[in-house]
Amino acid sequence: MKSEKISVLFASFEADPFMKTGGLGDVGGSLPAALKKAGANVRLIMPKFGTIPEEYRAQMVHVADFTVSLSWRNQYCGIEKLTKNGVVCYFIDNEYYFRRDKAYGFYDDGERIAFFAKAVLDCIPHLPGFKPDVIHCNDWHTALTPVFLKAFHRDDPLYSGIRTVFTIHNLKFQGIYPRSCCGDLLGLSDAQACALGLAYEDTINYMRGALCCADKLITVSPTYAEEICLDFYGENAQDIFRHRKGDLSGILNGISYGRYSPRTDKLIDYRYTVKTVQQNKAKNKLQLQASLGLAQRADVPMLALISRLTDQKGLDLLVFILHELMEQDIQLVILGVGDDKYEQAFRAAAQSMPDKMAAVLTFSEPLSHRIYAAADMVLVPSLFEPCGLTQMIAMSYGALPIVRETGGLKDSVIPYNKETGEGTGFSFANYNAHELLFTAKRAVELYTEKPDVWHSLVCRAMAQDFSWNASAEKYMALYRSVPGKESAS
Ligand code: ADP
Image 1: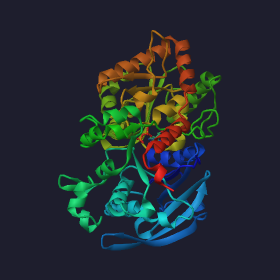
Image 2: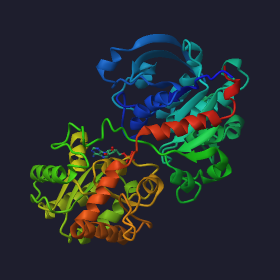
Image 3: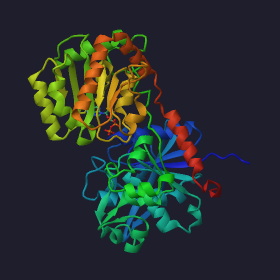
Image 4: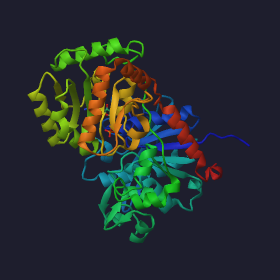
């Protein structure tokens, strides 16, 4: 039996360092390389955004150009490529759609994204020496690819044997448009839209199309895969998830230790390992305190929150108990941007106790590293969390996460058990402000009264392995399990 490499076309709207607005960018930037290491013949495909740094644009070479049709529109589509970290990356070029100052937030996002999803399929005959066995789509921006594959290529020999895998990174954003866009934009009849799962009430919902048409559905943690079958987490798609439970699984994301390791991180003041974490975290803390105007004390437990400031992140809980929490002998550092109501609440609280609390309401990658390296605990009390990287990064830096037991937080943090001493952090079950408060108080008490136990938890947290290797192996097993590989040549 000949052992062929499985060929994977990894389609994503974001991939670091070309485009990143959040966790999807991290995944698009790291998972393809990990898949390659695990033995896949993998290629990334994404839009050629106008904001891609010039150093990468200069490396791109033209591969092909052709026309993509979207209903009555015929649009130019170029393919360019470069190789990054050993992975061939294709860029879909259309200046009208993608030469803009950001990735999303335009009146015609529905059209731009439909164009991209169609281009992913239409480029296949133009990729020399590469035919995918699997197209791996990510989030609603690529949700129409499995739909178009079914709608337009069902009997096309060139596409036979191609299977689709769809990963849900964020179920909140589904791509919902008026029903009229079905014929006018997607070139589908109303009956087709219903049969393909796109039609929902009086709308067209891109993500629902993928949830119905993709061969396998993945979310970014096993617990979240369970949760989205429930009404509370399902965002109106819970019926589909329940119906397709056999095709749905969860694979935890990883983090890149090249970027998030206190041993090598050039963004922090004092680098450290498990051997030097006690001394150097204290030094980092003193530096951070000085730069943020906090009282300079190495012994004070420092809590941190590094987050988008949205209700998903459980910030209502934190705001509710903030003053009670701050009665403790602790310091709190907040780094985040987002909803006004949270920014105002954190700004006002920090102004009222400047020696104990700092709120930096901006996005700063370098500052986030300095905070991870200085903090003793990182708060992640999310309402829901498909995976979450913050808690994994925190553990790598020996800052123990305090999390709500949901989604990837539940799958990555082992709660401290005072009977056995095991644990890599602290957790609480219910979305309840006082559960957060008591859990934080328990952590602070352990830090203050049992430094040896604390240190053993820190060492264990730092030793956890959240690298992409394990996830990549699971994706490989999943690709192999999708029926149809044998029929692909
Ligand atoms: P999400 O993708 O839902 O925002 P994740 O936990 O998956 O949440 O990823 C958040 C990432 O963004 C982490 O790397 C975190 O350190 C980073 N981050 C969040 N807010 C900020 C900020 N204001 N400045 C710098 N980094 C931030």
